[in-house]
Image (cartoon, rainbow, N blue to C red; front, side, top):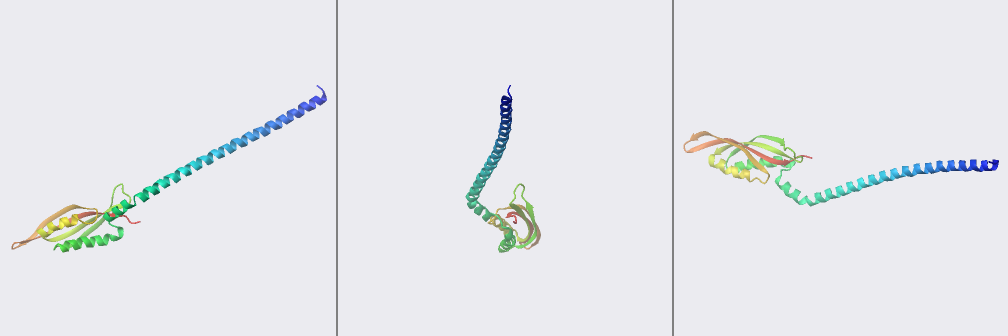
Length: 178
């Protein structure tokens, strides 16, 4: 082989080597850019999914506004607890009974995050007919409520009039404070 052919062969091999290195570098860069594009596409898909989920939740929230208003009419607001206690005592007095709030206890409702139960114990005394007439009044409170227990006993007999005393336990659903 002539020296000129050797030079051409070496130059060709050198150009081929450089070309292979450049080609390898380009393939590496294309692979790296492909990974970035795939990561960006995944992040974009997650963002679109979150936006869709938020839009669905927002629509559900807007659609449930009327139901939430109706629900709020049956549930005691946190700031209205004193009003409800006064309402119960006042209703008892209106029926001719002596009434006193004995205790109030706030109890969480299992698996419910926004509401809790207000357990109210009310001491009552008066005529049996008045006590009996008071129960439907309590059951018709404008709130979600339930009479849990009623205990009555005679206190004394004076002529034909018999005095009764008792304890009434009522559970009322109330909204938790924010």
